[in-house]
Image 1 (cartoon, one colour):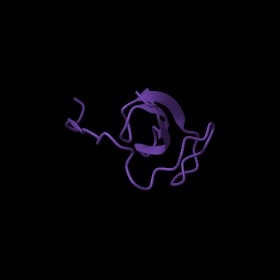
Image 2 (image 1 turned 60 degrees about the horizontal axis):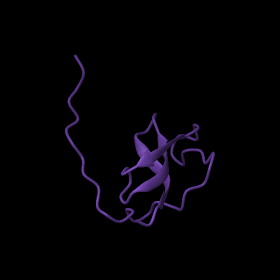
Image 3 (image 1 turned 180 degrees about the vertical axis):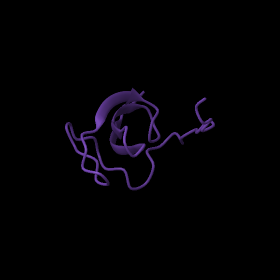
Image 4 (image 1 turned 60 degrees about the vertical axis):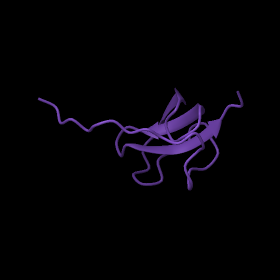
Length: 65
């Protein structure tokens, strides 16, 4: 059985401390490659890098509506 981690809702703006999206940016915590995604992770709506090992948003750029 897997652990329930609950639901996390991000704000409409990108969270403080997340740099602008950079393709192929490694995770600053574990230095492993990050996975690209598109959506709401990290706040706002747009493209992002996500570290599957650490569970953090590495970089993010929002798209204007």
